[in-house]
Image (cartoon, rainbow, N blue to C red; front, side):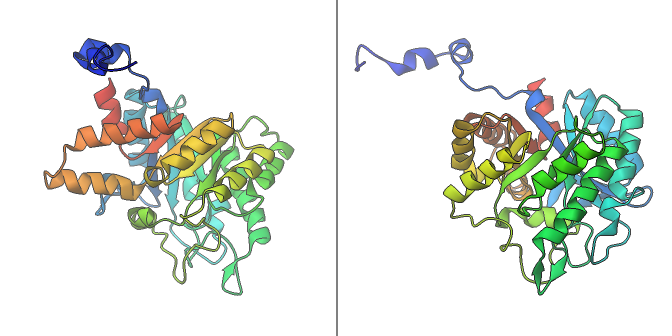
Length: 323
């Protein structure tokens, strides 16, 4: 096909043509909304670096969960801010922990909404790392026991999906084993299979009060320079019976999303993380960009790269535009 006989603009010249040949579609069904549940009452505290996103007490989380469900968004993912933190993050796996109580409250009032829970220790430890500290670093194998206990406690509280985000080796297998042994073989594991040690997480650490008190997380989260390591990590999680694979962050790692989509047949999740959200919000506030258009173009790009689902703080805004 050569110009002038072939003219690509023929099929772009009006909106109906563009709609008819559109290759990638973003739907409300593709969206997952993150929520931050805080211990206490009458709390709705906006996160300064994330306009429109709040730390909220359970009654306000439930009210927003109803709003999310009414918008047609199928799922939320929960992060917890406990009353107390300690060296081993006991609130993470307590029967009366902040997330466990939040799950029960949502399931009582909005039973059809899918509740996904983040399984990690960083929000619950006083040192801000994702497990038990030994000799200045996270002890992988001892941490697995806590992660498994946390996932089981979430399942017992009524979670529909558990999502380990810690990047400990072997955690998917440990969680699968404990769920299966306790009659929760029906609960899927959404693995943060490829999670990079990224600067894009800054606003989230404000939201979840989870900034490390010493060092950083580069001994367990991945080096942003690595591609083949991502494939190895995803392969291990597939072998350990993960039900979903996730790439986090998404925007700077669209090539990794495409690699995983081409290699594996599990549902693929992109996490449109806090820094990506905050950059759009900040630029839109200064009228440097059209915030809605950039938001939708960004989410569409993640879909085009291979994501089946997108965890995004933009979910409610996007859902309103998609209706």
